Amino acid sequence: MKLIFCKWGSICEDGMSNGLRELGHEIVWFTEKCTHKDLDVNYIKALSAFLTKEKEVDFVFSVNFIPIIAKVCTIHKIMYLSYTVDSPCMTLYSKSLSGPYVKAFVFDYALYTQFSAYAPDNVFYLSLGADMPFYETVHSTEADHKKFDCDVSFIGSYHTEMCAYDALAKKLPEYMQGYVEGIIEAQVQVHGYNFIADSITDEWAEQFRKYTGYEIMPDYIDDPRMLIADQFIGYKCTQKDRIKTLNAICERFKMDLYTTEDKNLVPKANFRGIADSRTMMPKIFQCSKINLNMTAKTIRTGLAQRIFDVMAVGGFLISNYQAEIPEYFVPGEDIVLYESIPDLLDKIAYYLSHEEERLLIARNGQEKVRKFHSYKTKLEQLLQMSGF
Image (cartoon, rainbow, N blue to C red; front, side, top):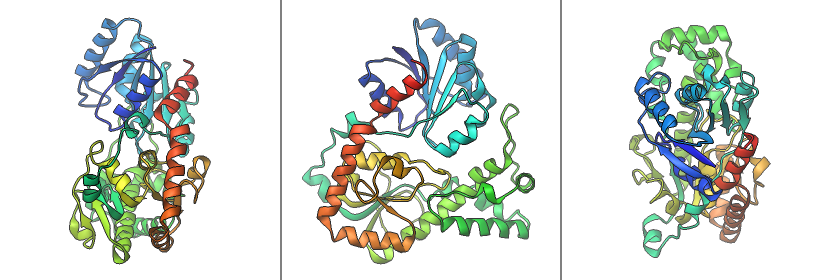
């Protein structure tokens, strides 16, 4: 088939385009920059003209659901398929999700449950995958090992740059601030179950929103509890969880931390700066004895992209528990899961001293990703579920 791939800068675009090409499909890239995912008139005109010019196009595709693309595709009566890799993805609240030419795939089953209630014929669940054609080419050299070898590594942010709650907290009444802090402290202790939205009412969320100045788009579904849980409280939970966990690890082990955030928040880490996702990150995964995944609290049940990326390149992974992980991987056989910080520290110590077990688990995980979780496999499923 022939498809138009609307590019906007997601790190998953290369992997998904590789998967589509493996399936034999022709990709025509649309690279116009979009300044607003709902209201960019120039983008509407450019995409509309592009669709008119291109002949015999079977569908339009993007990573993440982009409302403005859905609207243009409706005008041209061409199917729009999207594969969402981020959570939260606020554009899913757009009422254009219910359009007659939309098929939207989400990787988190909790997200699927939420949004399929609004658009049951348009929203589908599909876990993420890995760019195997690329990862199969990654082979760390002796020089790479000298540069990247370490006991434990983490690549990612603390989410401080995404955390709008920090600036907001001082504006809240004391009782409301205390309630939020209580939710955060409780949620940080729990892995694999997100209860933030269940801890607040619509009325409380509306009152909270008055202090944020946050206004929803006119043609968006208004779900106050989920919006506040994801946009404010969820990011703060992730920040506290990551800083607390990283500091606990550094008290006992040597850890390389790849981030651009404040060194003073995790002072005992070995800061390595930013890791390029194509040239550095896969080699770090291969060279680290233990790779750490701490799923953002805004991902409620699903598997983050990082899980597949580490395992695809043959890295050993310890991850927090997520409800969907056992559906795809066997804990202790393909991946190692932790349920608390003390449990994580014990497992780091164990696997650092049991190399054969560690390497076997890494090999098992890589083979399972190769067989069942390549983007070729996932996109074939996506197209079948879309009716192609």
